[in-house]
Image (cartoon, rainbow, N blue to C red; front, side, top):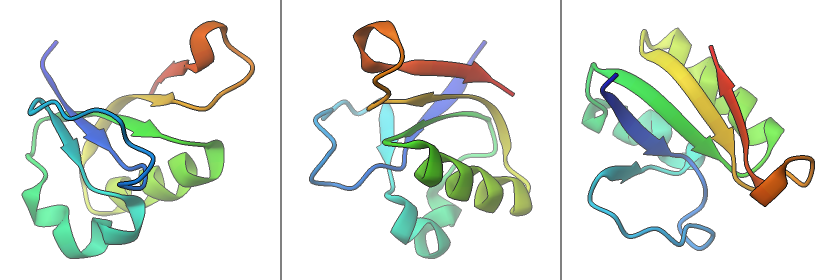
Amino acid sequence: MNATILDIRDYNTTNNRSEDILNIPYAYLRRFNHEISDDNIHVIASDKLELNLGLRFLLKKGFKVISYEIANCPCKKGGFEFGVR
């Protein structure tokens, strides 16, 4: 399954510099949502609040979010929590 990876964490929290990952922090989603492709989207967030706000915005704008991960989740092995919508 091909999906666009969208990282909505703050710039200073993000440690990935991969060209495959689109980094648009939640605070900038309204301004830069036109840069997100119409493909399926996998969202990376730093916590549940940021994830919920980001998902609400993206779904309201008509984007198809198929999965997500919370990078700072202390509850899962390795610090990541994965989910599928």
